[in-house]
Each structure stands twice: as structure tokens, then as C-alpha cells.
Image 1 (spheres, helix red, strand yellow):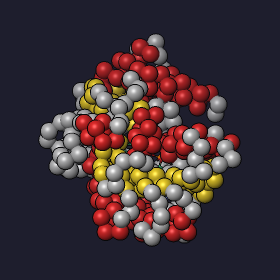
Image 2 (cartoon, rainbow, N blue to C red):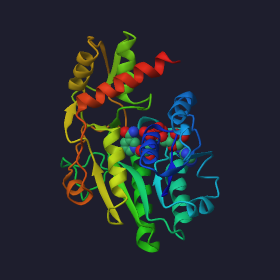
Image 3 (cartoon, helix red, strand yellow):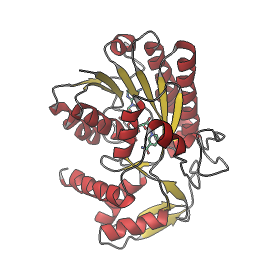
Length: 315
Ligand SMILES: NC(=O)c1ccc[n+]([C@@H]2O[C@H](COP(=O)([O-])OP(=O)(O)OC[C@H]3O[C@@H](n4cnc5c(N)ncnc54)[C@H](O)[C@@H]3O)[C@@H](O)[C@H]2O)c1
């Protein structure tokens, strides 16, 4: 039975990926330090289903503390998703958390991987490395112009991954995720907040004029890209987008009609670090990775609406 390490396994995307790996017969070593960026009980819920599988082992600790060399020796592949996420919080006094949990943690894991026999090291990068790159849709070769400290740490981590690939043959693939949503989405992310506010009949806060656009990607498509990355050539970087770009106001209308409600919107000035538009060119991902997004925005939103309804009903 193949064994996978998933860092950030208690988080939004890591828990979805762990479930898919377990369903496919992998055994999974999940690692997460339960950073307090959002409430612990949500992460506990993410883990609850995984703990039902005999093949799931979980270690609660930080990548900055663990004896990673010993742990990487035990697995066939590493999916590195642990990070301090979130663009807006990465300015000011919290930047050191981003440096430690994104750059330092990645470097430690790569050091531990360099003498191992792992077949693939798959890194969760981000569309935030593009920042305000001038031409959209962004291609993997587009100039990287991160617009937030978070984006800078993801870019540095991605480059470290490439450095260890090229110097030590750590066989790596980096996936640049574009705004991920769906089952388990983090409570600080826009759709989660919108759906919760609408269900409580409260106003939605929109930063900016609502005309900003995003390439939203359903988490099951992100998980699929991670699975495909296991067979991709080492040293490559791929965009993983949802296949369509849409304005924020349009999405809010869509959420409103799916929830049969009329959202009330409170417009606020745009926030530092937020880019105007994102859009992924998927040509390279389609041709080399075999990645084609499967979930329409409407389908993915319905999954998230159901998830959020359940999450807060059970509290
Ligand atoms: N959600 C998105 O839209 C999005 C977009 C682009 C990239 N990403 C990347 O995908 C990955 C997963 O994001 P997510 O949305 O699931 O976030 P998340 O916060 O839900 O999950 C990340 C997990 O990593 C854990 N973690 C942080 N530092 C750690 C450390 N030092 N040791 C062990 N665990 C640690 C946290 O406790 C958390 O549970 C991150 O690398 C993020 O940068 C996410």
C-alpha cells in the first residue's frame, strides 16, 4: 500500500486531499499544528471523517519542530499544503508567522526530503505569486509580481522547491491554486462568509466595487490536480484554475439565487494586498498534467452551501 504524507491535513484543502488518498487505498500520514488562524473546532471536524479510516495516522505538531527526516523516510510521496494562508493578514506584525510557516517550514521539509526515496514532492503554491502580472490569463512563464507579503512567501517557497529539485533531485511539482472553494472552505474566505451571512439574513461585506474578477476553483478539482501531479515530470509548475473567470458581484447574485435570498451588500474600500483580477491559462496543465476542471461554479457553490448549512447546524 502506497503511503502519502499530507502536511496541513486538518486544513481545508489538506483534509479533502487526505480523504481522496484514503479512498484510493493510500495510507496517509497527516501532519498539522492547528494554527489558530481560524477556530480549532472546524479543523477537528475536518479530521473527524479521516480518523474513521484505518490507514490514517495523524500527528499534531509543527513542521518547524518535528523530526521530519525520520517521517519522510516512512512515506512514498509528500503533499506539502501546510502554510499560513490569507493575504490581508500578512502585512505588519504577523509577517513573521508567514515567514516561519511558509518559507522556513518548506525549507525544513525539503531538507528532510533530500536524502529520501520519495517519488514526488507536491507543493501547494498559489495564484498570488502572479500578483498584478500585466497580461491575463496568466501563464506559468508570466512575470511573477506578488502584491502581498503572503504572495512573496509563496513565491519564495515555490522557488525553494525548485532549488531542491535541481540541486538534490527532490522530484517536485508545484501547483498554483487559484481561489479555492467548496466543501470545507476556510471561514475567513469570501464565499464562506457570504453564505453564512445570507443564511443569517445579515449584510455581506464586499471590499472594492464588486467588479474584481477571480478564477474560482472547486476543491475537488484541486484534489484531482494533486493526484495527477504524482505522475507529472519533476521540476514542473502548473496553474490549477477553475476554467472560468467571473466578477464578484455576479457570484453574489448566483449565491443569492441558489439560496433563494436577496443578498444585502455593504461595500467597503478595497483592502491592501487584494489584486483586481486573476485568471489561469490552463494550456500547460491540460497538455502535460492532463488536468481539466470538472466542476461548474454553480455545482461547487451548491456543495459549499450544503457544507456550511451542516457545519453551523451541528454547533
Ligand atoms: N484556499 C485557497 O484558496 C488557496 C489558494 C492558493 C493556495 N493555497 C494554499 O493551499 C494550502 C492549503 O490552504 P487551505 O486553504 O487549506 O488553508 P488552511 O489554513 O485551511 O490549511 C493549512 C493548514 O496548515 C497548518 N499549518 C500551518 N503551519 C504549519 C506548520 N508549521 N506545521 C504544521 N502545520 C501547519 C494549519 O494549522 C492549517 O490547518 C496552503 O499552502 C495555501 O497557501 C490555498
